[in-house]
Length: 146
Image (cartoon, rainbow, N blue to C red; front, side):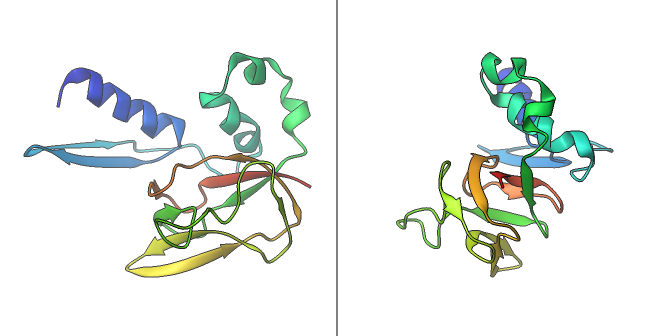
């Protein structure tokens, strides 16, 4: 594992608000850890999340224009899955309308597949996590427009 790959891991740590990443590649194990990550429930988190990896046009928009967006957060630590199986279609995609109580993803924790339901109705504006990535408790998963 070279320095560029380690820097990319650090970027992912920051980008997704994770507190820890551990990767093993060709017998080399790298573990990056942050002592304090920004709280996912803080008011600025929902507005800041899409601008991190987005195009400059999104970053240039006023934060107030995204203040109305609602966040679906991870209710537990685990692995995020967008679909019920590897060959299935995702539960939701950006632009899809969701109903209150509709399953939007799965978080696997301790070999249990936990279906995560939307607590509100709205349109999916942004999926904030890649499929099969680890998520932390309270980490934003989706942004919804009510």
